Amino acid sequence: MGYKESSESRLYLEKLKRLGKDNGLVPYTHTPPLERIMDISSIVLIIAAIVIGIYFKSWAYFFILTAIALLIFSIRELFVQNDRTLIRIYGPLGRIRYLFEDTFRDKYLQYFNESNTNGRPIPRIVRDYIYQKAKAIKPIASFGTELDDFDFENTAQSHILHRNFPGSVKKASYEVVIGEQREGVRPFTVKNSINVSAMSYGSINWKAAECISIGAKNVAYVNTGEGGYGPHGVAGNDTVFQIGTGKFGVGKQGVLNDGTPARFLDEDLLVDLVRNNDNIRMIQVKISQGAKPGLGGVLPGIKVTPEIAAVRKVPIGKTIMSPQQHAEFIAATPEESVLKMLDFIKEVRNLTELPVGIKLCVGRLDEIDLLIEGIKEIGEGPDAIQVDGADGGTGAGENIFMNYVGFGSSFETISYLDRKLKEAGIRDDIKISGSGKLFTPAHAALAFAVGSDIVETARGVMLSLGCIQSLHCHTNECPTGITTNSKWRMHGIDIPEKSTRVHHYLEGFHDDMLHLTEILGHSDPRDITTQDIRIISHKNKFFRYFDEDPFGLYMPNANDFEDYIHD
Image (cartoon, rainbow, N blue to C red):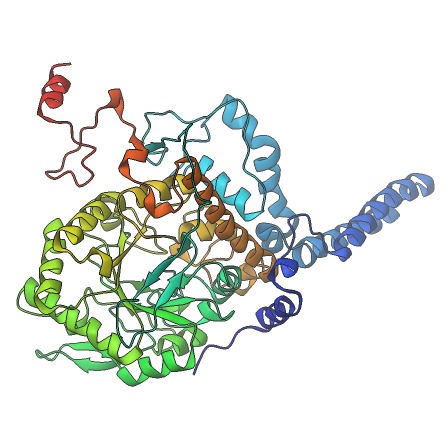
């Protein structure tokens, strides 16, 4: 059974088709007509309650009219207003959050607690950029930066070196084609510098996924994550279908040679899926992700609704665990595993006639060497490689793996991968995508400088949907209704309004990225180099505890190192 879009999304998609996307988006200043009527009615009733109570000297009239006013206002908050998710879920009580945020927060932070650069995993100053972009508000501040130039945890580790005398520069543009060198493969053209990284149906609910699909339509592509092809493509937007180790949506039960149960690719299901959804433009084989490197995913049984079970083709209400690695890749040695993976990629490409990429979080750099040796040996490889940093996000992951496992940032791994592919003479055949804490064009500029062709974000899009970083993704109690299947909490998501926010964030990010590209004197973000970026560090020196410096920027040379020790 294929996924069928909700009635809300269907009506909104029909409206967008009728009016065009630009005219059908919800303006930030939009207020439903009934909302104003109910506001006025509530105010009139409160005034009437006071006047009538005093005039007739009767508390009964006062309480009755006040209760009616509060009832109307509560209905307005819960069901009519659509731009505040928390208020749609919690009613007037939810307004307390915005009262503190809009009225008291700045004063409290200024006098008692933290600054805008505090907060983990994403500092407030970065979240504000995303929120403002999502609302189509130009992010503007006063009186200078709040950032400490040497605090590399909050500054994307870099400064962008603009040119005062750029010479003649063409207007910046962006386009990347994946799979164009392959015969019998339908190439995939990527037109937006920022795209939507993997968020599975189940880790986010259908409403959030449909909003992302609609918002990304004609702007960016959306990666389905490993949870099968569900609501991520309801708008007909460009979609990357991810095959995880659990083969959800395209898998079948089987056994390994030792009799252990395992899930294998069902070729017929995959072919039918691609044939019936021509907006699937690429297949991605997930090896690992940054938030839980070395582990498979877990979806608690409470989240496995009938709809999710139908999309994933698994039992309803039963906890789903993805294995650590693909059953097809299991072998006696790492070298054999790599060769089996490359054979699997070739098989999937032949079946679907689409480009095929992989996603991985690197733990050991020698595995990149192993991958490249395998590609050279058999003359086949992935069309794209998505590199996730060890600091990636997730709906649920074990702390020890999230905090301490993985090589490092995606920047470091991308730089190493880019260099090794060039040395092997196969860089032009493989596109590199970067993900993991890439929330703004400043982060993306560094990713492009070290070798990315494409940039992706998941948490940035979640924030544009209204996420407030409550860190409750794994509890099924997300306060903004994004990572829960609680119908009441999901009620807070208004599809037209939230789709609009996603659209503005993706489009606004891209526009800002092109603007940054122009001030660097380039006409394409992929032309940005490490010469355009200054890595900020204490005393302009950087000391890192790893053997190899993939950037060629962090580790001081021998003389500097001696100076650093004796300072």
